[in-house]
Length: 205
Image (cartoon, rainbow, N blue to C red; front, side, top):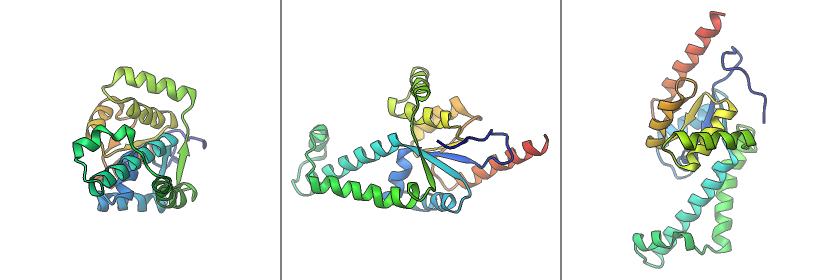
């Protein structure tokens, strides 16, 4: 992990934590305008960004489910309900699994993580304790508790998620210490407001 700066430091650049669904938006071309704008801002160095190894695990699982569902519905003509019942029994081929690995490498690792644009973080024992604490306090899934704990332990300013329910719960609990935004056309404006407030606070010292 890198060295975290105090949030009130004038040197501190806004640090985003990107939830799994933000990467799915990117690779599946969902919410293209706001997602493209967000990743372009990160690439240009306007904001720092981090995510976790847990994000990559979730991404791969979601992609496996997508590939399995598409094959079963389009090729084997199974109903959606039938596919959903058998999702845990998915039998992806080596070729299909390799295809998912290529997507992960081409769309996320090579342009963002390997390039040092998005930092990949790991959950420490302290982080697991924090996730356990959050799971006890909030009506969220264990997966979401891990993501929020990661953002909290890492010292992120903004948790970016497309999950509206998670955004509502996390906002009520964390703000203003961590601001929680959905990926929308307003995200740049909201982050700029946070940035100006931090600069104003720094100037008063």
